[in-house]
Length: 327
Image (cartoon, rainbow, N blue to C red):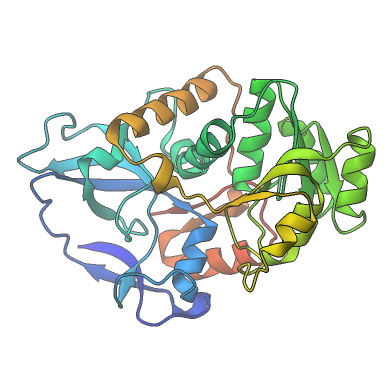
């Protein structure tokens, strides 16, 4: 028997329940993975709450984990039992001790990267990859604004920006989070609880606005983000931690300088096996050389059965960096 987390109705963390099940055989092009560490991502809370509805209920949760392949389907040739793998775009259900997924969604995990490091960084790292390298290609020396710089995605973005020689200006909510963002490579930080973001950005950047803003916060920072952009600048809205942006009057984009807005997703940018392997190679290369370090605090590692508590902690904004479920 195996254990997984599922929910039968949308709602808060209390809808999550641990249940036992018998894993099905992997399909022709699938692999079965015994998960060793499972990534917790903010998008999981959107699916649980119903903001992003799953295909049906009851539903599993989670798309990211790292572990050991135990079985492979008859059509799988590039992965074998015993391989260490990581994945981030599986069907819902990665919050599980055993998970079946399409083989092309998994990549072989380098020996230098642990299961916990992989599960804590893969989806977030792929997100930073498509944001900084594809949605808008950040150039060396270029200043830009990145909200929630001490979160799981944000800390990887700080390190990746530093590796690119770019100037990430990060927003944070406390002095401790500011310290962590700076240590990770942020060029400058803005404490949004104490400072006006748009005014402080101008002071930091010599009176100039920036060409691109990356915003995973959503509702609370929408207009502030637009106020930080140069004419014809790009607003990259890739999350909704404060709630979704709704009821937008497109006229505001012309009023603030003929701005561009995009709402990208990983699936739209990394949607082939070749693209996934290229992104993974760049991420793991940066990890192997020490440019990106991912360490998960012991207080942010939760037993799989305590997924409910893990979500409560994540949504309280008390976490810094990545969190994990351990089967």
